[in-house]
Image (cartoon, each protein chain N blue to C red):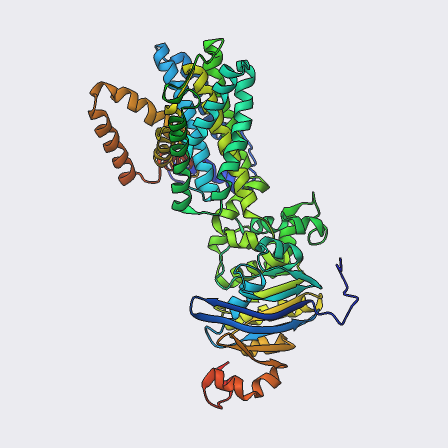
Length: 338
Length: 268
């Protein structure tokens, strides 16, 4: 017979996908690790981050990044699974933050209660306030949600309530720096996997239906406003938690919690990370926010570099890192002997 | 309420009274009235722009009518009732431009209507019920409507389906909420002759199962095969109603279609 050995390409994902569509039938350790490694890499990587950071400053940066990550996951959920482009990040953070600060400083509620209460109450408040905007779609919803943080900033400033421009000082800090660092990371991981599961559950299908064709959802006897409201509630829960958490880090709640950064950076992160993947936006924030910290050395030029990097990404890799990486990972093949 | 067999046979399933709707200066509908009885296949025809789709939109509340009364199963539907409430009462509709949930496989498209309150209340198609296996129920409905069950077609992404299947999917989406009345907005349009040939038995089957249908059509030949009563609209005004033969013999109908006394069936 032939002297030379013959080889062919083998793609690991093909076998898994062919065996059953939808539910993966995994039949070997190789295949199991093929599926598990990326997930474990993400979880362990996130958990290891605070340990790897050299200084307390960078550990703090990681915590801030995680807040943005929560907002970015929320943005991705609303934009790519419900069809609502939300610029309300600053609004969610602000409401959650101020609620926590008010409860903690004015009412003397301990930290263990302020964070969960501010998260839940904030989620409800944000959803109720956004309810009139829910019939809007696309850019109109974006503009309407952008107005909310502006309204609240000016209200607090003009009426001089909640400390006015000085903000509320004297918010209690986290009892232990490690709780502070790890709580948010665990929340990010939980939120990410929970939402990833949600979008493939029945309710997730409903949300995707609203995005694809809301008229048909209406014609099926389902109120699209209630579907949107639930999605907004989930997103604002994450944002308000981020706000409450942030206030307890800074021990201060101020107008900067309503800042535009919280609305804009999640969008940029979603563009860079890859929309619709949920994990992509998290990755995006972990690139963008530390990048802007590193670029601080360049002073005002920081913004220039930042913008150039963003433009390069949008022009050359508009699909996003995660979409690209996922495709390449699935296309990974090895030579096997025939 | 009167679920199931309508005891009072004197009462129409759907009664439309003096519907009017204008868009700015355009009078899309003017004093249109008609009754649809249980078990009817009621055809609505008319030249382009005669207000057929507007009529459907007004009935299903996707567009607010200006004036007029609507009674369904003896119950008055107010002017501002939201469309999902209309669907919840049992009026399902297809859309002229088929737009499925593109990012979902065909059978998952049916999960959405099966999740509706009405589908859960009425037990789903063959008892999917509140906690039934919606995937299976979805596949059952698709099979009923002509998706080959054991092929891969029901599992394909809706964006990958050809027009014929998309039209069926539209119909399947309606049937999933177990409606009392289905309004088909040009279900035959854009289909090839053979696709239509497989579609008409479906309509006949639905009719035999006791589903009442309103069909808006341009394909008159196919419509007349299934419809027992036909209404003709022109410039938003009802100009004729009756059996297909009666309607086609009507001078006003010929005039509306051709402005002459040519045979309308030539056009179909």
